[in-house]
Image 1 (tube, rainbow, N blue to C red):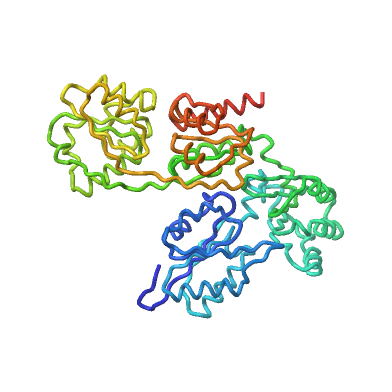
Image 2: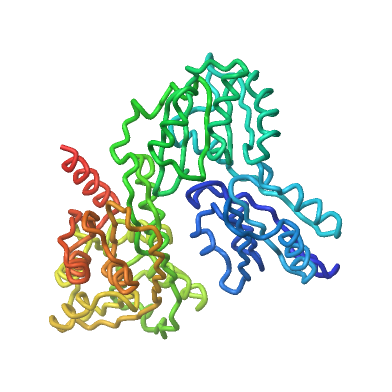
Length: 496
């Protein structure tokens, strides 16, 4: 993305989407992960900043009503200045850069100074927030058009524009209009819109504190006041509001607020399974894996004698085969090796490298893996265990107790960085490891009285009891599916 020969950098205007970080585009995420500088706004998922390279500069230029903020001219100067320093700058904007995002002004400034740029569109709240609320902005036989307007303007200008807007057919969308809601509805009615036209106020977007208020033009302002709706909010006016697609949807976890812990991969798996059920998952931490410089005796491992290679995590497998590649070890050299894994996910990861596990315990825990190994390891066979520095010693203790010849290699370490903002509203927190429990506890997080923990396995549950002095819900097996099942059953029981 850099043009070093010209001594000038490049600016990418990237739409972050609205709500969850998963709503950024693949291209936008790739640019974010490779930038030198990120210049970012309010109303983006803060966890997107975790994707920025550690050495990259982070510059906050958020703009919110009733709050001092960066001037547009200053933002444009920052973009030009950093690009002139031969840097790749990502201008990260909430929603889409060109939907009331002033992206056009920033590009004009870049053009004026001869700065190369590109634009990556984002998902606008005008479309996404109604969709999340079960309101299709267009629908056959109901609305054939869509009109989006900002209400963040002078009163006289707003009234003039609204007079024209009122005469349009189809769905009307207002952004930044909550403070002008009274004016909006009155002018629409004065200029011909039926006072019984369905209307909705969607506040909080895709955050933990969502609010959906529906009514008509006649009563929506009063309802919004009664509900205490706060900004940011999207206002929808039109017959599509009455469709209310969520009414008949089967969403057993609708708006249930769930905290996610553990590694990024683990959280991604949970999020993928939770969202189709209507849940609102939020990341409470990010896990950064660091490769450790363990000295692996490759000649000994591939000497042709029978032995066991044991993995207790997907990350351990990745690190093992990365080191294998670095050492130029041909996979055919492992013909005398048998492989053991702690669970189905680890087994699937191993199969991705062309090896079918010889052993996978029915219960995906370290004690179960140890007992299965003790049954299958023959006299004279050595065990090579590849794990995390934070991994439990239960497996090695059992091998030592039975005098099994083994060698453990800590090939990676995991560091958890916690984010405890606005977590008091969570109803459930999911834990996939004792390490995740302890990291959250060490961060100073205070678990609410009504917040419940769901843990994988006995070790994780014991850590939860010790740290938070509460009884957790324990999944029947150490899998994402078992955690989801435990969550669904608990929610159903609480409603029954």
